[in-house]
Length: 88
Image (cartoon, rainbow, N blue to C red; front, side):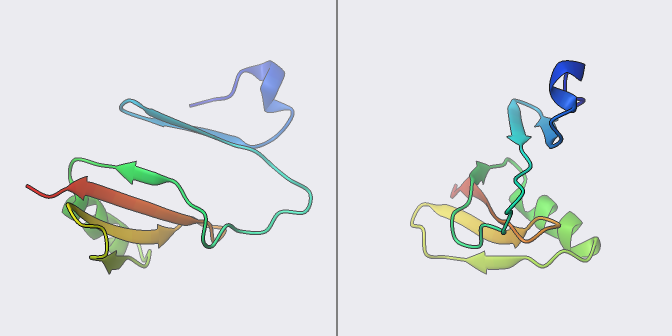
């Protein structure tokens, strides 16, 4: 999704998928968030893990959240991302 022109001059990125929208900003003293992270619930967790792996993105499965299947990955600048789905 493109940012509105009045906001685009600030830099950053807006991403939309289905009912989720994420707005990312730019900071001069940026450092990746390696612990803090968004938890994103997805419908087809295994499909997403396969797509990421096929694109060369590391996927680290974690079974430490009862009631959910989940994995962690990182975006292109090192920020931690959690993707999860409720167990059936």
